[in-house]
Image 1: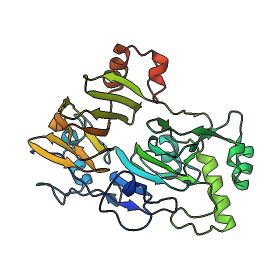
Image 2: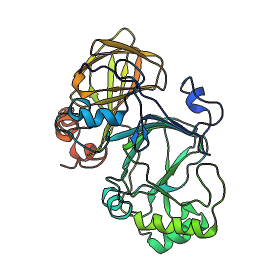
Image 3: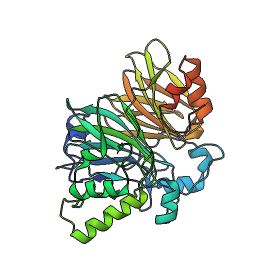
Image 4: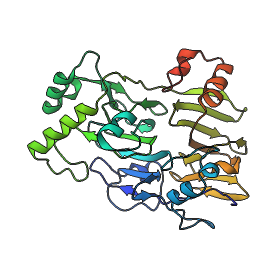
Length: 355
């Protein structure tokens, strides 16, 4: 197969916390009128598998490509039930519900799902004073947490952290969390849409839940909650990449890594890779060349670069977010250690990085 950069369909979610920031602050065109909470950039969820919209593979679903050529699309030797990561732009003009996503073991045990959902948020924009709720304070048990959730007194039990543009937090499955208002995020996560939330209203339209349904949801959340994770926002770790190129590793773990690449005008670096790259644009239009194809990537748009392509050239100016499945030793620990970072600093990027 002659692979090339894939443009994919991008479902939109109009949850109650959304606004117009993806269009107005990021410059994305073609969005529907009214609030837009999320755009799903690369999705292979059951019933929501993205469809290729360009080139010879137009009309094929991502699921079909995963099933037909998993090694060429994702990476050599890989296999799985679906493309392994889901990426989104999220507009938290309002506050997201306080919620969590099960980890792998809990998702298999309680929901008969192949995996849970660990995720990471990279902050693109945030109003002064914006905060996020990330994890539960040390010493809080199930009874105290249950009482606070039913009182909707989240600050009594949860950690409230400042949110700053350019920072990233890696959120393991089972971690209670929320962010917003006035926060714009790029999210990368395991491919899953499972969640339990603590609010007495529906995320889709804000309509109230009955008391019994709400309390039952809180109990399911408590069953899936992990008290231990207390992740913090990190500024990312820079790796030398040339005088006019900035490469920052934002987060990394066994499920995904996320980097931010900034390229100066007039510079066209080439990057080698052997695992699929999800390339999302955080800046103005940028030219991306791979497999003999050149695609102009608009603001807040995404390309999926199959692993078999092997090389990509980016023409600056560019500001790109790049997600992929890492070899943690080769892609993360070794280059960061060679750049002078110590084991504790490297481990702060996510999970599975401790020496």
